Length: 424
Ligand code: ARG
Ligand code: ZN
Image 1: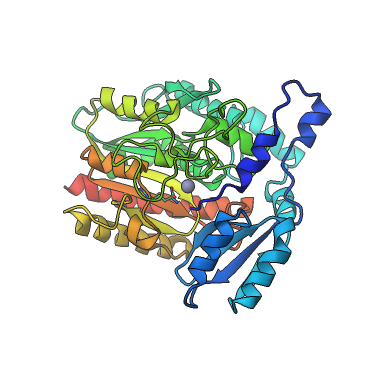
Image 2: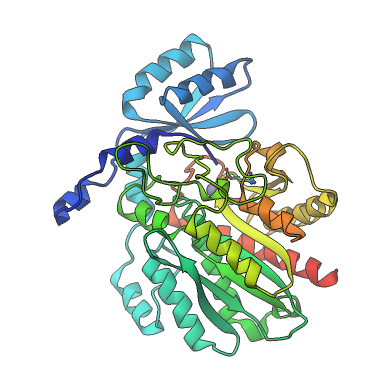
């Protein structure tokens, strides 16, 4: 949830080709002194002021709750932004004083006992940590080997940098099953998303026999990391990277396309940018990216009867349905609203978190080329973007201690979804 060009500036500096290990480590973007503020937008004209600061690359906007906007500020801009907001009498509050400190504390290593336990289990996945792609892929392979009767893993394509896009399918093989597709990790820095998708996979896979009939009588497709290059990049180089890793044109422009502006329904409309340096760069054409194209081709080839599409993002705690491209809703929006309300209710009763439900253009902002709009345009009725925790206290840098509760809540919501689609 955002749009800025600050991260790209850092990116264009990196042009060296061969690096020593020490140099690679020092190539990590340092967010020391960078801050996250909540800036009130209740005063008339405050959105305009923030828009101007954004265009001048003084700030990046991360999220909003309707009365305030979460604003990311680099250290060298703090003085000026403070001056402008004070002069304009716009209220603000510093939420994170030093982002690098939060990044350093976010994902502490496991103690030795737990590492040993992992090795005995046959995979390294758990939900006490955020994991590298290698652990996630290893977990999927482990499940397909352990439960071959119900689980298969297939690569649906490769990313720009050649990483496999792995889809895990869980099915009891009943040919009359309806199907649900779930993805995560479209945006690289939203680490809670792949963590949540893998948690759900683990629950279904490890307890399939004891699962409810609603779960067992659906075909489940999971793509936990749609943007593996970006995901690895956030671990290795820049924790706050959003887009994929499409290389920039040599000498000018920046790298990265926002995959959630690259899908082919009403591509290129509101809330997108034609500039490669923008955080919401839509790419040169619809489905120009290998990652989004692979999803497109997967659906073209798949014979499954998809009735729901869920894509997990962060943050803000929203259950969003189409349309995203403009402030309009599909004819059956009341069905999406009422199921969304039921999911939000069960989330609140499960783990206590509050989710708002509505169309994404209305609740957030118009943004064309999203995967949810495209899925809906393909006739998949229940198409939702779920923005996971939190509401701007940690933003994208959500501590690992939150993972299990967030994922558990989403699992509870999926059970409500499964019951509904089986009823129809
Ligand atoms: N935070 C998401 C994004 O900016 C929201 C997407 C909602 N869907 C949409 N089609 N606009 O990409
Ligand atoms: Zn996102």
